[in-house]
Image 1 (tube, rainbow, N blue to C red):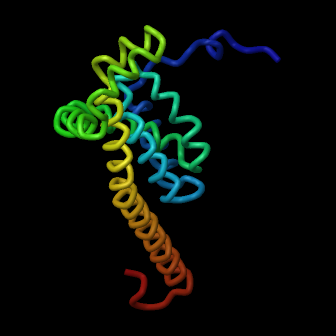
Image 2 (cartoon, rainbow, N blue to C red; image 1 turned 180 degrees about the vertical axis):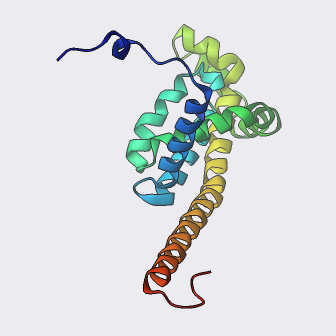
Image 3 (cartoon, helix red, strand yellow; image 1 turned 30 degrees about the vertical axis):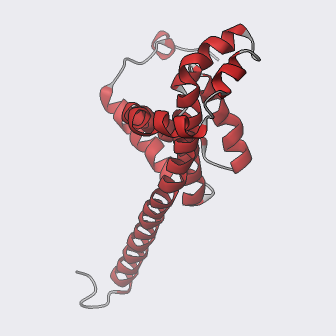
Length: 184
């Protein structure tokens, strides 16, 4: 098979095409196999994991993969939840993560733990143990709270889509049968 020289060139970047790609991916997400529950589960996983990612130097991101698989979530939904978590992380960390972690971690536990872990972990835990523990708790609670509104919104979107399709079919049937008054 021979290719012309123009067929081998890469297409130029087109902002309109990028917008269409995002819209296409959004529609795929709304119509995901497994439905709203899987997408909402993925979103909640991504949000919960983001709440303790920063103190762990970004390594918590790798928890998304097994958690999505274990909990049967949607990976694209998890990434969206992760990005949403990035947006709200700083206010949440200041207002909730550190105080909740301080309440949960016993007073002498940090010093005990630092002496029983490798040096590279001890340096991380010195300043961020409360953030990590508080982030896990707040992230889990926030993920559970966000699961239900996301699922309900996706179900609402699916039912509206189903209603529009039903009305369109009824209208087409009325037009085809030639019934008076139904053609408007």
